[in-house]
Image (cartoon, rainbow, N blue to C red; front, side):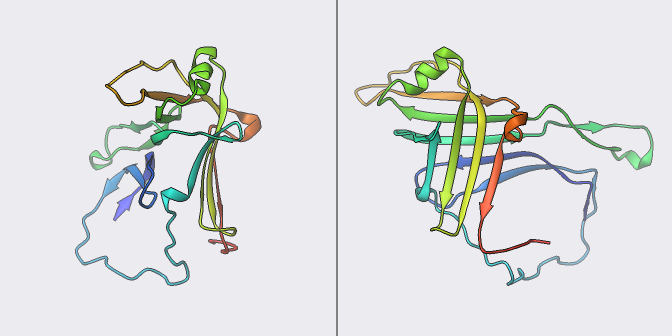
Length: 190
């Protein structure tokens, strides 16, 4: 049994194939080993339907980005342990610090759109949308993403690839650094 657990980090790797997967980094106040098995069956009320990454699109200001080789979306709460004296050596809790959102993209040059944005230093709206048809979708929207200038690398006779390490800024008018919208046939998860 885990007590006082919070998500510290969520990472989603974006590639051209396979199912989308999120990796969660958790922190907790305490953990007690179980003395019996905790295995069970999943409730059949919510069937597991996963999104395929090949049905995903990464767009900037409403236009699909071409030649994105891979990307990694990372959200961090930057949790800090509250260490107090007593209580059996347990931490008192976890406080979130300034959250951070990054989008790292490996791109093959076809044009200079992203490079121009990085040089100008202006934030742009980025969206990663996944779809399983007309009635099932998952959309991540980053309303203010800044791209620093990348280090240009020319590895050989292939096309030029660069990595952009984007950092999101808080946008209170848009609802924060990122919004996630899940559309499906389930009316409520309550």
